[in-house]
Length: 497
Image (cartoon, rainbow, N blue to C red; front, side, top):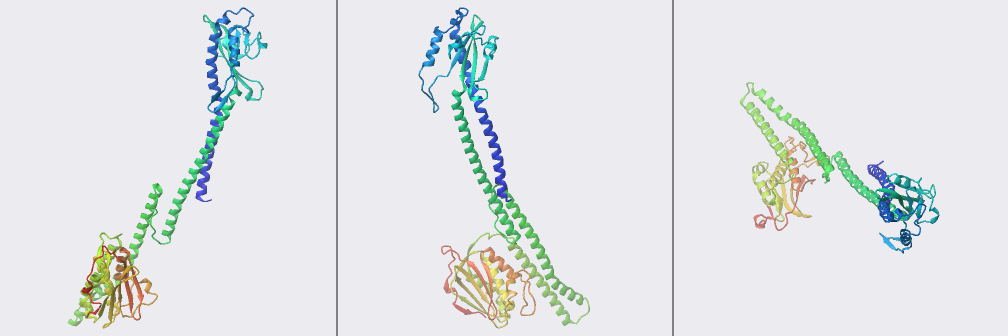
């Protein structure tokens, strides 16, 4: 069973059980509450009427009745009064109080329902018996034994004269007269309860949906991480957001650890060759050697030491770039100036290898970025071409615009790269054999690729016939902030020797 269905069923079960018991309690309490309120009103009524009948009952002769007295007439007048009252939307069209009066022995002297009960002994009924003993007297009696709707409530009050109980007045009211109020209250409670249950279920669905959506985003993120990708951290709130950020931090730490292990292994492998050469030359120099041989071994030590220094410098540079998440400050960088600067720095090597740069400027372009880093990228790209280009061959450079991007392109006429090796160029410590038979570290193109990533661009390497075509593709700076370059500063095509 899926997580969302489990959560929804659990929420539905809890809400349903809670709603059932709450509604049951409310509905079960309606009828007793109405009876309690009705009894409270009847207590007040009975005591009020007991005061009204006290004088007449005190002067009643033994065996007499109140059937034709003033109190009896007023009660009968009350029963005949027309009534049409709207009570909170319900209509009341009858007066429902009845009453009877007994003397001190419990004999009925007046009954508003019928005169047939006058003279009967009610002293055995709880309302009369308890009241005559000075207690609170009340009872509820069903007209039909198994039908609670026929229940009639009786509430008695003592009739006193000079502190002595001379009789009992009992007020009675059928429960059916308030049944419609009870049914309306129960109906309202049920309807509101169903609305509350529906609203609770709606909230449950929304909360469950949000939770499942958040968990699925976390799962999607974890699946991409497992596949070796680096997706963006899902932006979630609360504990799930903290979990996502913690997982991303853990991923970065694990990746950094794995990356460091790979770098250390590769660097160790790269260091073995120059260190072995230095050690061999140093051991030979400990012996007596002719001057020419000593010069050869000394030059070998110097060369391998320089190789080590270059390797360490490039590793430090690459590590610094990989630890940089974004550019600190971006300015408008003219690409032509970067290419000119790289050519000037490599002028001695170009001359030594008799390479001929052919510098084509189709249009002066500027990009937003770090001028120093872009210059490093162009310089490393040029150095890579110098290492592989045969003596006397041209190096074709150009700056142009293509598909909304600025492109710095460099093509050499060297041996090129095999198809199987082309996708691996730009990986650290991966390199093909140079023109002189030596093998490089591959860090130069790795640095270029990292610089392009920081600038939102990319390094493209394509085979040429002959040689290799390397391109730096960078987003163009918007026209309003682009650095303007004077086109007259560059020839459209020129050869540098």
